[in-house]
Length: 215
Image (cartoon, rainbow, N blue to C red; front, side, top):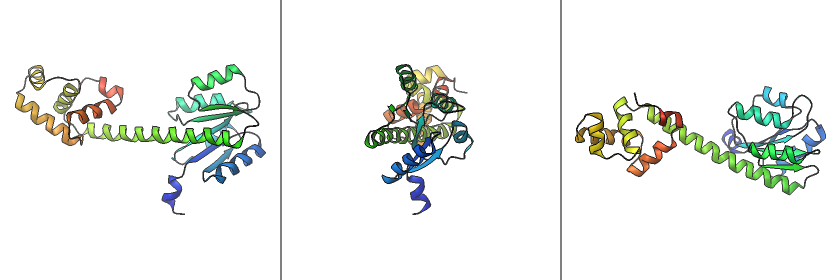
């Protein structure tokens, strides 16, 4: 198998303090063509060098040194909002509500049917692939936005907010012809062909860029 093929395969990260459970879950994931890595604790996972691949987390709730719920919150706070499937032998309604509110895919009680777990993991992987795709698209838009001149950013913002060329010209104190030239340059740099595409490119930018005054 080539390195590229390996990097394309989803990676399931399993955190459970029971070595037998980790081994069984790893075998299950690998039996359906998924890569898997097991960790005995939340600390062990956070200290590991994890490759940047699509996938999801399968977390035990109650573990020495930090619960799965704590790990979920820690990862989210660090910007790693990878989807989580919880497994527990001691779940309760309060834990379930907390986990689901924080974005968990599912909260499953041990022992769990293999197919039930695999279904939840599949949903988690699909969600992560979609999240990564949106993030990559946003990064491309940010890079393109950075190539705009200050005036082009002003015109971009105005066009995206629905201003007409005459309105933009009046607001910026420039001619309509100049507005059109800037708009054409913006569309070329943002790699779009229509105004609708330009608006979508604007909406794909992070909120802080959209809300900042052009400068």
